[in-house]
Image (cartoon, rainbow, N blue to C red):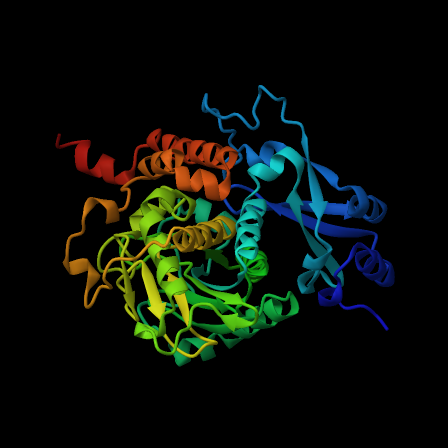
Length: 458
């Protein structure tokens, strides 16, 4: 019987499926610090060797930004000109095998950095957090949902237009529109079929509120697989759009006129096959475990924000009244807070981590959302009283206020002892330095707003 991609679980399975398909090459990918998937075609025999021994991938992908510019902060330790940018070992993960329907019978495999690089690898960071959960007796389930804008543009046309006056796939506000979803059904159905074929199925896809903005909710899975699915979805939704001479963006906020784009994360903990979050007799059906999990998320949100809001642009989304939280708050079934507890049955009881933008590295956003909750359980952290009503209409004590800039957020991460314990001191130092670099690059540029405001008048 011919092996299917989603049945691949071992090195032997990976060899078998490549042989059965008669492939001369396969595609492999790794994810960098910004959540960008980098990869290449690998010849069959090289791939077989890499299954056993791993392969080398230039560690510059852990030492540059999303524009391929090298981190040149004096504080960068892991890699740089001082190390000569050597190859870092990467292990291929057979269980991540996917069909690539857009490339006939091509196969795709994810990789993960190993040895010294593992300390700063985003996927490795999430895996270590999940190992901690397992040591505590928990299995973690997660599902991510993404908002993304689609334009009738191409990578060339947006550059020719200077990223101005872009034509969206559909105009104006029309959330949950069946008219739009039906008019553009070929796009919707094609994306749904692609996601199903690549084992990142969507449980929902609909028009959001804004011109050409869609929301896709990825089906819940074990948390490491959820990170893989999210990284693949963001990559191949863009590929799918560009194949149709369109372009999709997951930028946190591309226009001041429209709401920002979220990457909300739904999380639940399980122990021995039963929900660790659900208590039929508890207030809001929350168990003590869930209450402490939310308490930890809330308490450490200001310290770990840069792992979630990891771009300068992400901070433009965190403004009142535009469906994004502005402080470390929580509530029950309330979309104005950073954390939304969703009470329900044992199967559905969960917390929604609403602070996350669409441009976040999914592995790091998951690591932050889950790790801080585990810390709360370990330390019996009680959350504040839940918000009732509009969270934007009140002020909060300093400990609940979020950093206002990426540099400030990176500084909070660097000083956080809890973050070092959860994610490793090497990761914290490297990632904080990379975020300081990101804002330093931004500061080199003069915005249109500054020119219009100051050029003549000041």
